Image (tube, rainbow, N blue to C red; front, top):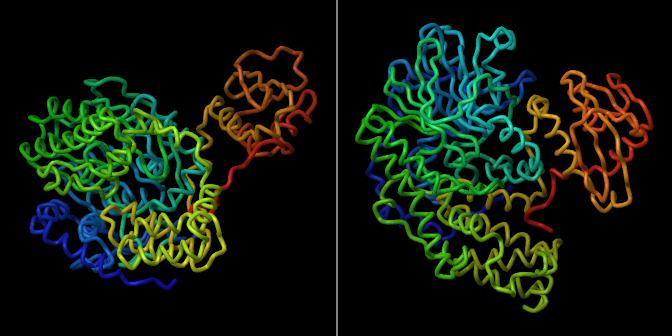
Length: 623
């Protein structure tokens, strides 16, 4: 794919940052290199079929000074995050970094090792464990801790835990209360749409290089191996709760509703080490991730960081998290946590101040400035989240999508709106002419707005698509935020080459099998094509023999409803099966063995006939 060089305005803006930001401060590089023990002999991690799921050397090009095509602040962050290998945090605590989006930690116990957050894929997790054992010996895994309910912190567990060990209760799986429900629902309910947008967010289809994908700020990108999940054997329910695993005492702090709906921090007295999960990392995090999620609460996030300072600040010699590199020394830990606390607190409070003065989310975001003391800290920069989209997320959390202006209460949808704008401006050629003027003047934001309308009004207009791709490319080159860069470049790629679909999916069979019956039925309900089901009136019973549970299910007015109750005997259809067979049934398999049918199977076929499979290849930059 042909790409353009950065324009003079973008190159000049990137050069100006070299004087505006404290690039002479190299403390983070010392921290990221500290304790390095070694890395994989072969940087390529493959699955059982030989497909590459991670290449630890793919970012070796990120070296030296930033090219003009990359914001130098993002280049600096990517240099730090791209480092890969096994690192000693303190004697007895280690981290494998640079083998997935997240970091996997190892806590040595009396007779084995406790793993923390085993990455996304079983292949990358197994490779990380192998690297640890190559340097620290073949210690058995005695426990796995999931700090929170996002897939990059549990998905690789099947690569580090043997099923026999789990069944024999040799391995404990520790997680915060509510972990399983949140972990499953996030990857299933809106999983199709989130997966498609995640391809944009992480630049899954982009070439890695100075004009392409250089990272995502929090980590470089996501691995593409097999993801799974295991049901926790120990739920952590309250702050101050302690657990001793193979001689290692662990003290927990609950932090629900922060970076994840189910999340916790923990402290290790033996090592004077504090794990902050994903609530204190070396960047501004997302309050609403660009792939989509529930809006997070910066107020409570800030409060839990204050509580961590009070509970653990004077007892900790090192702080580590499940992304990035640790922070050593009590004073530095308290300072780091204080900066992170103030960052989220300031975003929350000042956005609310703007709301109560009558400003919209977009208006607040455009004028919002962090205090100079926070800007001077590299850990506050928006490499993953951004001030702009976080402020808009806070507005959404409190005020919703409507900004109060009645003209914006019932606008036309994007394509119809675009057609009217283009006609009013004087036709698509005139819109492209104006966009070219904006492009030449370096006003890429206005050019993108014009061209968005142009391609939605006339999707086959080659000149509009070409200039739109060029415009998004320039916006990418100037972005400090890694995920913004990936979104811009992914949009440019699809305009030039066509829809690349959803490269990876989080809803793997190993995750789907953990759905509760209620979650399975919910997943059916959100797939019902309402208009096609308006005239259907269906009912049937299901008994799940392996769980000893029965449900009565109905479809009426296009709404699928389930109630747990014993079969009444008068339902026109009764199915008897196991939960794994139910999973196949939800996938459309009505014919294979493993299901006893009593009654009219046509009822089931009628239900399946109105289920929508979703579209993992829906368009984003085109209508």
